Length: 304
Image 1 (tube, one colour):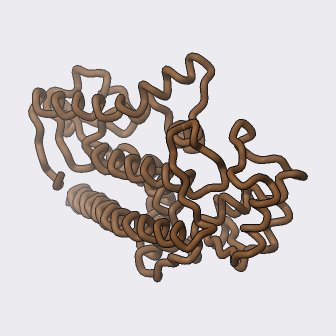
Image 2: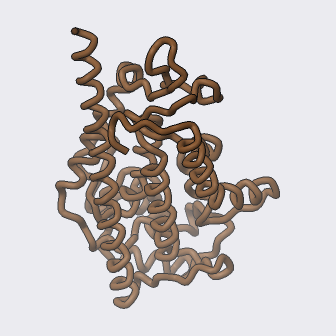
Image 3: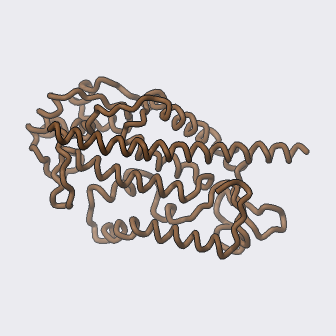
């Protein structure tokens, strides 16, 4: 939505309900599994790896610049970074200035990371080997998903790693490599070099768009957050299909990246994710441009 959009009480409540229905498609099965102590190696990931809780995801946010009429009489009025549009108004809007005063450095970091990632060439030759590097020498190290068997066994997994070039640019994947696999990576990403190494072909960089959006709540709309969530959901599925784990019991067909056919299929899907993530990066940057526009306008008003 553009700045200065105004939604009536009934309009925004309808959007809120639609958002909650959309989120519950993913959240309710997870909560049901968790209540019974069950795990799902694919579908639990976005709720366990990332720090955005289901209850937080369920909260509908219109994004910066959108006025919600008669919202002051709802629980939303107590949410952080929501404010009345004027002293006696019953309408609420996101407090852009308040957010920037407290978390402006996060906004700057995300803007820089997302914009520079878009500018770099995509690498479509990694073939998802990061998951294999995390299971390298499992006879010594064990595996992260201890309840999942390795499709090729420990020895076969090691052979795949040893017969391929490992070129992982994403620090939050690389940091889970086994000690023996780390030196095999042609790149040695660190937290400090993340902004210089992130590239648009990376599946984990695509998933992390969800993280960068929720870190900017409530400036970013729930529509964009959920579009990023659903991209991450699809990416995680492929990430695990291409992993060394046998997910047959979970209904996941393997993408056998150790074969030419599997590599071709992985790259095809990877290119599709790169296109989707580029569209979402552009939308995120446009949202941050709007935030900057609102902040500049508010500054001028304060000086007049």
